[in-house]
Amino acid sequence: MADDAPRVSCPFLRELFALLTTELPASPLGVQDQLFQLLLDLERRAQSKGAEPRSLAAIAAARKTAGAAASTIWPPRDRWH
Image (cartoon, rainbow, N blue to C red; front, side, top):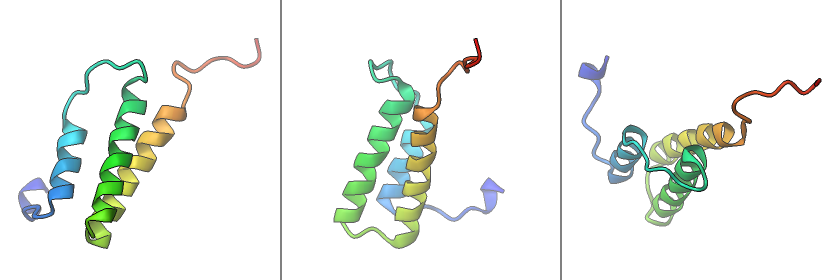
């Protein structure tokens, strides 16, 4: 499937790919929170520079997923004890 993918010409999508494929250094925020913040910054820059709607949608989807992961308690705790 990746062989069929078109080359990415949008610099914001290239940056999104780089963020998602790079191991982030340890942070007091935690990796999920750090990724969420980086994606939020990327989304704001892309909006301000007039990125295409499809690029913005891809960045927003990744940001939302990172935000959901950041808000999840891990490891899961048994709330009944």
